[in-house]
Length: 71
Image (tube, rainbow, N blue to C red; front, side, top):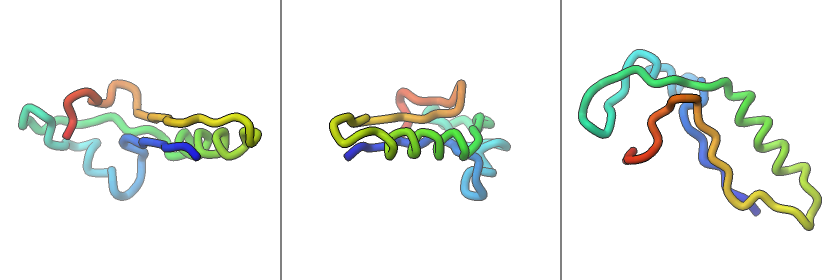
């Protein structure tokens, strides 16, 4: 079993982030998004591993996406 943490995959739910989202410091700033296919490839990779191998945790983020300090 593994866990995948996903950040800002381009979907209807994240569309507003490209125009501006509240940041940890209270400012509103646009955020980068990534193609949802990038997430799908990660899921597929984990699913295709043999039973004796496991990716315990994976974090897939858009390049330059805010990470540390997000709440």
